[in-house]
Length: 419
Image 1 (tube, helix red, strand yellow):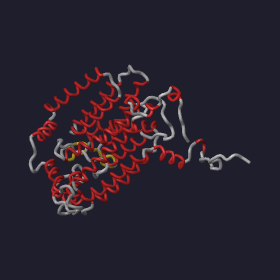
Image 2 (cartoon, rainbow, N blue to C red):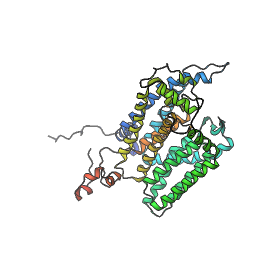
Image 3 (cartoon, one colour):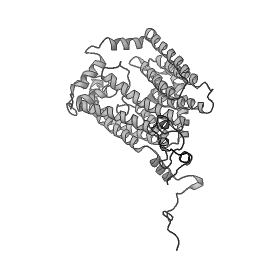
Image 4 (cartoon, rainbow, N blue to C red):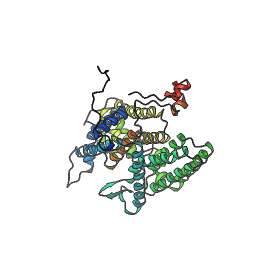
C-alpha cells in the first residue's frame, strides 16, 4: 500500500508556458491582500452612495435652471456609474505585484506632471480656478498625481538602502517644491499643503539625518510664511477663517447644516438646511450626513477612517522592504489627510480647501483617483500569510514586531514557511 499523502490526488494548477492560470493568480491575490482593509473600503463606498443620494436633491435643485430641471437623484445615478468604474480600477490595480505597482506609479507621475505643466495654458477655468484639463473627459491632473507622487517619493527615498550618499532628500524636496509651485498657479493652495504634508511624513519615516531635516523644515516654514504675505489666495482663505465667518460663508453654512440634525439626525430626505448648502454632494457631504443621519453617524465615519489608517500601519509594522513601508505609509497618510481636512473644514476648524471626502463624496476623476490610491495601497501591502519574516523591520525597532519574539540565534536565522 502506498502511504497516504494529503493533497496528493489534487490536480496541480494549470501553468501554460510557465505562467500561473488566471484563477490561480486570483486565489493568490485573495490570500495575500488585506481583506479587512478591502472590506472597510467597500463599506465606506456603500455608505458614500447613500450619502450622495441624500445630498443629490440639494445639488440638483441648485443647478436646475428654468429651461432644464434636473432629477432629484441625478447625481446619485451618476455616482453609481462612477463607482462602478472606480471598482474596476481598484481591483485591476490591486492585483499588481509591488514591482508593477511601482512602475505604474512612476508612469502616471510622469504623465500627470507633464499635464500639470499644461494646465495654466489649456486648462478649463471653473469657479475662478484653472485646475481641470479636457482630454476625452474633464479631470484634474493633480488628483491622479497624488498617489503617483507617493510612489515616486518612496522609490527615490529607498535608494538610500543601496547608497546612503545619494542626495535623495534634495531630489524629493525639489519635486515637491515644483509640484507645489504649479499648484499655486492654478490656484490650489489646499492640495499644495497636502502634498507637502505627505512629503513630510515620508521623509521623517525614511530616517533622514536630523541636521538635513532641520534645514529643509526651516526652509519650508520660511516659504509658508512668505506665502501668506505674497499669495493672495492663501491670505484671503486664512484671514477669512481667523476672522470668523458670516451666515453666508460656505464653511459657516456647512457647520450649521452639520449641527442641525443633532445626535440622531432629521432622517433620510428630511434635511432642510442642505438645500442652501453649495457643493452639498462633494465638498460638504459630511455636513449632509450630520443633518440627516446625525452626529453619531458622523463619529462612526471618523472611526472608520481611523480604523483604515491603523489597519494599514499595523500591517506595515513588520515590513522589511523600505519602499513598501514608505509607499504604504504615504498612501494611507494621503487618504487619511484628505479625509480629515475635509471633515475639519465642515466643522469650521480649518479654512475651506475644496477637497472631497475620499470614498464618500460624489466625483468623476476624484473618485477614480481615490480608487487608484486604494488599489495601489492594497497592492503595496500584499503579503504571503505563510511566510514569517526573520529580518528586523520597523516593528522590531519599536519592540512590537514579530521578530521581537525570536530570542535565540537559531530562531533569527531560520525562515519558517507553513503551507
